[in-house]
Amino acid sequence: MEKKIAVFPGSFDPITIGHVDLVKRALPLFDEIIVAVGINSTKKYLFPLEQRLEWLYQVFQKEPRIKVDSFQNLTAHYCQRIGARYLLRGLRNASDFDYEKTISQLNHIVGGGIETVFLIAQPEYSHISSTIVREIIVGGADATPFIPKEITIPG
Image 1: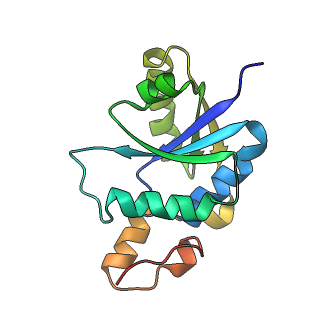
Image 2 (image 1 turned 60 degrees about the horizontal axis):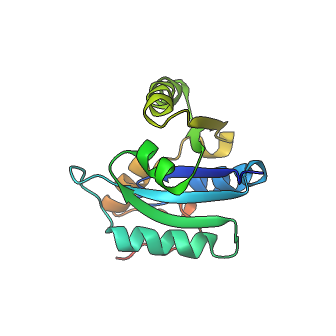
C-alpha cells in the first residue's frame, strides 16, 4: 500500500503553537508529515531559514513520523518530487478558507491531483498567526505564550 505522505508548507517565521497543534492533530491521518519551509525570494523574513529549520527540528524531534524540510518554487511541484499526495492546511477563519480553497484548487491542477486536507484551528489558537507573533516580537513584547516551549526567540 502506498505511504500516505502529507506536506504542511509555510514560512514558519516563527512557528507557533497553532502550527504545532495542527500537525499533532493531523498525525493520525497520515503515515508521515513533512513540515516544509517554503522559500520565497521576494519575501522578507524576520528569522533566517536556518533558524526556522532548527526550531522545527527542535519542536518535532521526538516524533519520527514528522520530518522537516525546505523547498523553493511551487509547493505542488515539491510534493510531486517527494511523492506526497496530500497537503495539510489550517483554517482559522472564513477568509483563510476563501484563500486556501483557491490555492487548493490550483494545486490540484498543477500537482496532478494532489489533495488538500483542511483542519479547523482549535478556538484557543484561532487568533494566532506568524504575522501577529512577528509584530509582537518586533514591538518588543513577550511572544512566549504563542510559540512552542522548545524554542527561544533571540534578543
